[in-house]
Length: 599
Ligand code: ADP
Ligand code: ZN
Image (tube, rainbow, N blue to C red; front, side):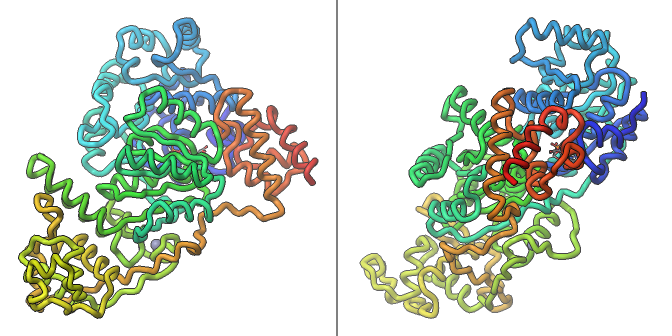
């Protein structure tokens, strides 16, 4: 064996340096150790098992939950000239036989297998007859029965330990709170594994959460002003809203597709295929879309509805910017979302303890929406990670939020709920406060109560903001049995009695037309725009030729580097990050020619 991990990194992948803990993991596994690797999305987990698989004797077996994921990885490795294959239900038997033979002959470096296939007797027998370099269990959190990605087949992976006691095992994931970590260790027999836990921060993602006014219009402005021609995902709560939003975006000239469980398997697969293989599509989707979406150049994830926990929010937004280039996580939310989520939770028949836990997760999510300091700090601290300074790349850091002493107005808002009998919705309560003599108010005699016209210092919008914050803070609740009528919760007592103060957020004016530019734009000078398009077109043509997604040919960051440095020779081209020997060989001339023509 005449390679070191560094040599492979340079010659094969064309990368300069290892990132974070990559080299430690690789060295440990090459030496035969087990490893538990927790790295954020886009952190570079794949290399951690690919390099040891190539440097150890035998084939590296990678267990991966989704066919699309496996296919992407196999294509990427083949592009680098590595002999990688996959075994799953989508492979016809002839090719399967060939692959099995290659494995037996020791001709494979990497073999991707679905967990259900791996557990068949035939497959275990096959592997027993092969020399195996390592087992890598990708998306290892799928073994957790409490998580949303639970895969029963993953539970059977326990038997790898018994069947192959001397083969190193690695579990890799981007989602692992403590309980999930413990479950992975227990279920996958990793008691002796070395743990490699990286920061979960995604510094290239800019977080923005703002008040919803006309959600769809705000989204359109955001896409048109900041992400014209970029790929993105828009999450909505319901199928109906997905369909409506996708249709509306198309009418407005944005290339958008819908994705939800109601569409039928074929249509879903088709839309997903288009999203992965074309550039600049916007996928409007329910949370059914996402798991296994490896597309590295998703430039934004937008939420038109509030996710039910910070875990969900972080997982969904984490699909942006896997390539490490600037990306946006953008969300709008309003009073209605808060009420709706709270009510939905009230109405479900869950076990009391589960309900309580969901409740506190939702509280944390709402807290994240309303905070006035750095969002990233708050997110990381939710995942038990401290960060000393504020990030400078979230809305609260970029444009500090004003707060005001809301003690007095909050008291008025609460007492208005109380005086009117704790059963009216926000609109009516606000009418009382601003003294609007509607029929409903007169009929109920609410023009006679003490809070009538007591709140003229704020307008309707501002009162809505106050009620939204009271709901988000858990001081009042809305009653699903009673059309969302508001009730006081015990927490509001100190405030009502004058024993507590309350700082409230002064909502920003939503200046629809001119959102402050985020850092989330790729740095492309106007003069370079043409060449950028041409580079992308060339990449697309090559990709279509070989029936692979464009990012398998070159990542956006490699293309950007070409754009910025305009290499004039193959040698210069070889210095571009992501241009390894094989790709230089295959594509170097084409891209050089294009750059020279354009000069
Ligand atoms: P993960 O599986 O952790 O989400 P990947 O393994 O897909 O992340 O890596 C994300 C991107 O970063 C890929 O495009 C990968 O090629 C690239 N990458 C990984 N390691 C390095 C490195 N050391 N230098 C440069 N790019 C890297
Ligand atoms: Zn910040």
